[in-house]
Amino acid sequence: MKILIAAGGTGGHIYPGLAIAEKIKTENPGAEIVFIGSMVGMEKNIIPQYGYPIDYIRVRGFERKASLETLAAIKGIFDGLSDAKKLIKKHQPDLVIGTGGFTAGPLLLIASRRKIKTMIHEQNAYPGKTNLMLGTRVNRIAISFKEAGKYFPQERTFLAGNPVRSDYHQIDRSELRKNLNLSDTQKMILIMGGSQGAGSINQSALSLIASYKDQDDRVIYHLTGKDQYESIKKEVDHLGLSPSGHVFVDAYSNEMHRLLGAADLVISRSGAMSVAEIQAVGVPSILVPYPLAAGNHQEFNARVITDPGGGVLIKDKELTGARLIQTVESLLEDEKKCQMMSQITKKQSIINAGDRIYAQIKKLMENE
Image (cartoon, rainbow, N blue to C red; front, side, top):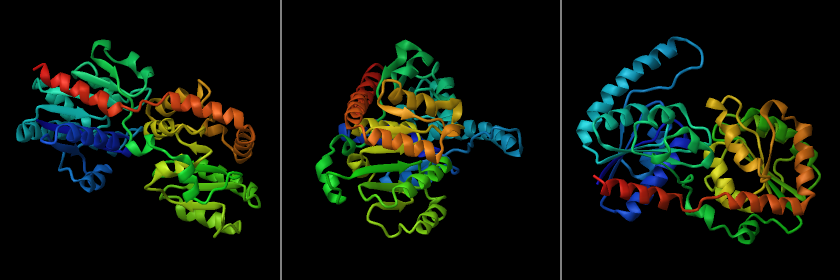
């Protein structure tokens, strides 16, 4: 079986594609998988690390305002369609899978026209534009939140969830806290804003860190994102907290499951994968959706957790240091509420997303 996976742009599109590929290879070691991406996204650096071959098409995202970049993006559509035709001819795939983003559009469109089996995976509660356009053309649509189902043809759509690594479903909280030297009396707060960082979260976090300057029963792990690390680290140093036994600042972590598993509370943006990881671990959360996300999809994602009571939603424009301090303390002082939030969040997790997706792939390939 020859499979092309179009997964490009951001990690939110790339990592689900990798998880799907891993599941396919586990179930069908003989399957040949090639990723399709663009030279302007993160995939050119990430995909090769996992040992998969990658080919490229010429596409790029649209700017929100008309500009020369917009004209270049329009030209990119035609370039992308041309490249997609060549790649389909070159690889002769049995199945083409797209995980959203502008990379997936041309490839899935050409594949559907050629009557090649197609599937898309939508990570968000409110679908992205590419997947919305492809929804009437592809054979199967895997959604991660039931809230997305109303945007797609019902007969082709199934609830899959967001596939996350098994590490997130095998959390030993006591062991993880022991490894971080956390005592039973300490509350650990994890702050994260995504790989690029979130300015509003980072700035409000500085107020929170300052308020806990002399409280070693509050342990903070602050992941700033690579672009803002130096400036935030400098601010923390000015507070006299570096080095510190209860405040840790880093750009990012390659072991997020360890930090989430040990945390009593997480403060985060609400990208699809962050939400899926928070659900898998079942950690109470304060979610601050990125306000410029396409279709406001991060707020839709956040509300999947916060509306039932699994977390607290604070809109970006309403986030201040004072509000963050008040919200964090009110939660940490209410252990019973945090336990309830944890249970609500964990209950929403779909632990067998990879199995569900592979079952549909198998069914699709058998119905040729």
